Image (cartoon, rainbow, N blue to C red):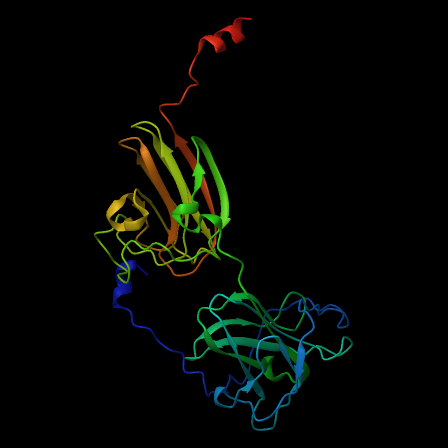
Length: 336
């Protein structure tokens, strides 16, 4: 969708909070089924068990389990008129890394083909998983909590699957932001080839070209930049120096925005060059010739709110290079 349409959209909430109805039949692509015993490998530290309490078939009836605990023992037991669905709830802080999974109560127990969904307090499905790896068990791994508050984990059986299981809830504090999260910690890029890879996953949204306005003709990219960002420092020594870089993000659904500023306290007014494609999320290429020496800041940002892995490739072509001063002592050393 063209970004011009973003200003016309209004948020839609998924009405899931009290619904436990699902399609009568489901299908999935054929998958490898290895031996049942030993397939499941949990990455959790030992968690405290919280026995399942019924009814817990909707968000309104969700059983509070909390971070660092397991719903265990638990089971999916269908009736002739309805499939069993279990809901649990927990609190997390913004930025926490949420890892949620199902597994066997005992290592030698058979697999239960589960589907899990992480759901917000407004009913929005944030993440889902059916089969994790070569297992019928499910896992949502290291999902960054978008807000501080209540979350739901919904567990159901694929196409009516049932049996005993455990559901684990782990919330880990996010790593600290990278050094170059802000201009004060900007990493210097020198003259020559540029080949940088990194991530904005744990950075903050420190800079926005036009806060709150998706389409912003006054900004140097034409849009705002509400995503997480990191900063690089360019010390330009001569007028005519040129930068030509390509900024690519993974996942591609994270739409990149890249720009150069001279004043980090006012990025919108001091932006001298920027690039953000008007449609889709392609790699962004920024080409700019510096009109004067000085310190410039290259900000790797995004039109979308999330963070992502990135690569930055290209060249900073310096027309003028700094040469060491030739002194009498240096000359004597050369010809000695």
